[in-house]
Image (cartoon, rainbow, N blue to C red; front, side, top):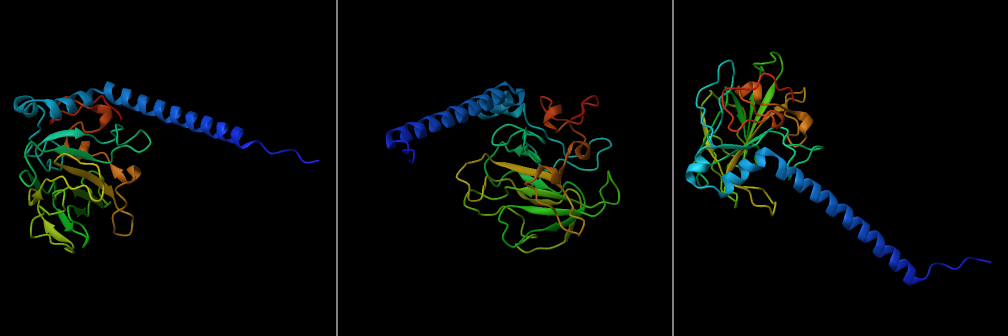
Amino acid sequence: MTRPSASPTRARRLLRLLLLLALVGVGGYLALRLAGDAADPQSDRFRQWWQGDDEQRQALITIQRERCDGAPFVLPADGFIGLLYGDPRGPYSAAAPHQGIDIFSPGEVGITPVYAATDGYITREASWRSALIQRVPDDPLQPGRTIWLYYAHMADRDGNSFIEPAFPPGATEVFVPQGTLLGYTGDYNGDSLRDIWVHLHFSIVLDDGRGSYTNELEFANTVDPSPYLGMSLHHACATDVPACTPDPTCTP
């Protein structure tokens, strides 16, 4: 004799219970994420940048046109360095933290200049509207290895580029010395529906060993920019306003 199957009513109740448990779990996770983000001192600076007046915003801006002592790179843009390397706050997480630094601009799109952080060779893939990548054939801090510098968001929301004409789509291996104007900051975010503030995303990406850059979206493929810029730019070593005074006692 076969056992009768569960009634449709019982099955629906079980499904509702599972959905409720899933919603509670997701809600709890999001609540913990929001609480963690709110408790992060860097979030207070974000609120000041978002809600503050011109004087308060100006106090958050880092301007470093020359190399810090002992550092090989210059800061590629002026602005509020609001997202740091290894930052776990949303939309990032501890499992997939921020891969570089985000330098937020005080002005509108197309105004704040972006400069080459060091000497190197600029490439712009044919499909790239807002980004450039720069090959540095000899890492100044680890001689013998190649690294790549990624500059992104240099276009408006519609994809109108602010990259200098010297680097048209398809440009390959264009040599530039440190301090060369590359373009201007924007707020292009691809096909994402999420709006972003005007900023430059800057990261250091490892070579794949065959003369090409690795996927910048994977944190393991990137390098902490702090020693290259001579500033405390790792989230674990955050200071109020990054400057040429890295914390020598902080080990991320």
